[in-house]
Amino acid sequence: MSTEQYSVLGEAPDSLKLQKLSSNDFHLSIENLNAGYGKMEILHDLNLYISKGQSLCLIGPNGAGKSTILHSIYGFTNIFSGQIKFDGKDITNLTPAEKLKTVGIAYILQDNSVFPDMTVEENLLMGGYIKDKAEESYEEAEKIFEKYDRLKQRRNQPAKVLSGGERRLLEISRALVMKPTILLVDEPSIGLEPKYIDMVFEILHDLQHNEKKTIILVEQNAKKGLEFSNIGYVLTSGKVVLAGQGNDLLNDAAVGRLFLGG
Image 1 (cartoon, helix red, strand yellow):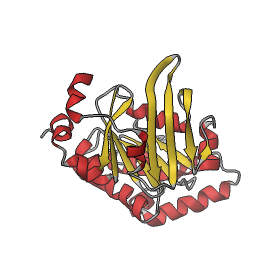
Image 2: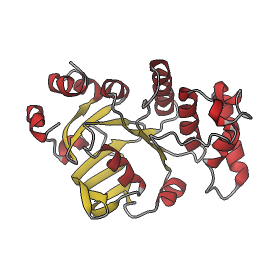
Image 3: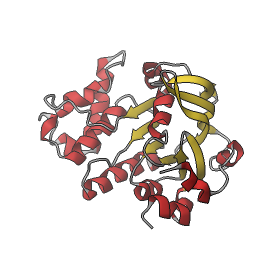
């Protein structure tokens, strides 16, 4: 999809417009970020703002830079300039391990990342591999088993017996062992049957609204992602070209034509 096709979306939002979609007390903010891989710059002067307990969905064509935003927040890219802040503190140059352990940012991969021959419980405990005290991981795993009975029933079985939806639940739950405050979720619905897609978004809804997690997700199923999220950003060529409340973007004719099949 060419950049010209986005001219119908109007003028790209500046940082002040993006800030107004959240409260002034930002849980995570990105300012004037230029980032990419090797010497290749993918994101160009990108801004992003989200408050605690909000959800933000990134949509756009393949290659727009959506996953690169998650990678940059977590520390998987080269940052050429700009800042990433957590509760106002600069975390741009922290390692992924530091962001997980000391800041509370967890990244949930889009690829099938369970260990198939390890039990469900062993997979969960892997989520706490950088904890100083192993018993804390066991405590968090027990809380997860109490919350999600479908995992509890399978705790001693190899993860390869799980359905696609159950594997996704395990991936999300494994990230929760470190008790993060921010979840970066890459393509939560990818490869799942519709009934499991609904289940995964119900889980994310519970984590946001009942456990006050802040969630930033990339989602190719734009309709599902925008229905779920408080805020939506439309990206192309490493820039935000449109942003708004999730429901407003769902009802935007141009967004519907380009992303929702309308």
